[in-house]
Length: 474
Image 1 (cartoon, rainbow, N blue to C red):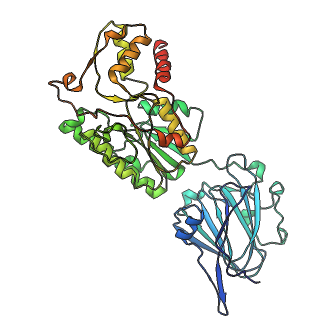
Image 2: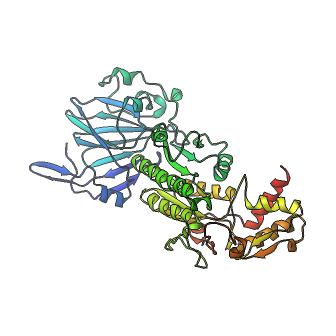
Image 3: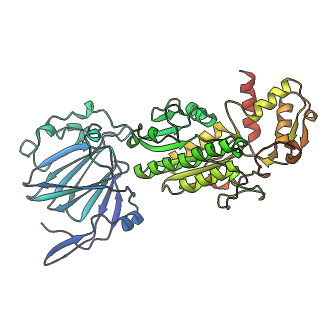
């Protein structure tokens, strides 16, 4: 058998099985034999192969031609290649979805490798004696992991595999002979998304958005506390591909107190550092919600690349959390402002005051935009599902920036009240004599980056109108 030497490194996606990739490998030979870089992270990732963080390399040596193994779909990604000899490889997609049951076959020698995504059944038949088949995988084998395998019978007719050596004459294990046919296979479920902090305003909006999606799970603080080291050991992180951190300490004024400062740093920094470590270890995408409070409010509009300059403790902890999350290779940091969702919030308070005939004084020198949790949840889903570039994104509702007093007047007008019932007052005068955290006076966030990714939130006027209508129906 001859090996084709000096191929160029080439990445070839398999059209029938999404995520599967054939790799043409450069093999260098002379009178002594041959050499190849079976896995070269820098070159292969640059060429377009997923950086799947391999952790274990296994070799299967096969004494005789006709040895046939598979179909095994493991709960991890694999990079398979031939160390010596030649094989006929076969793959069947055993994942949930439209490509379930699709197959692909290919002869492999030392100059070809295949990236096999999680849940795709892998099988091969040796074509010459003394063939060694190598597996590079990104998780450790364990008895627990083996219980999550999905198997397919090698002889299944519907897979359409034409084995070079008839299976009746091939060498198979007894286990491989009795695996189920395709019609009996339970497809491997996709990795899930875990939402933590699921009882807060954003968590509740995400629950509603994903109410019919069984691949999104929710954990409130009773199940998972960011600050509890023990809680991290109670979750099987290998079952997830992404974590949305919707939990945080958000008591801006209390964060300036001795106890509040400790609680804020515990949740927003120490807890986030534990979460980031887990996401790094398990290659998870981390979606983290941050705040306009990371800025001092001196810029007229805040871009994602602006240097953070928090004024108070809460903003300092959010800025520190951002720095930690940025160490996770797959991360989305979403900066938002003036969040409105289910529960106590500014719009609900103004509506209650209007209904009671109260004429409030409202701050008129803090400028920004509202962020309704419905839109925030939709933006999070957009980034994850569209595989947007990782990094920081500003996300608020759209429309002109306004003061809190402007927004209060809109609420009053929407409820048929006189807008002059709302009196504007400066931040300094409003908090005169009170121990409160400093606020950024300008919280306007530039939205061009997330809009360029294909997502645009509703205008805050439309969102507010819908929200007020729901208040009236409660």
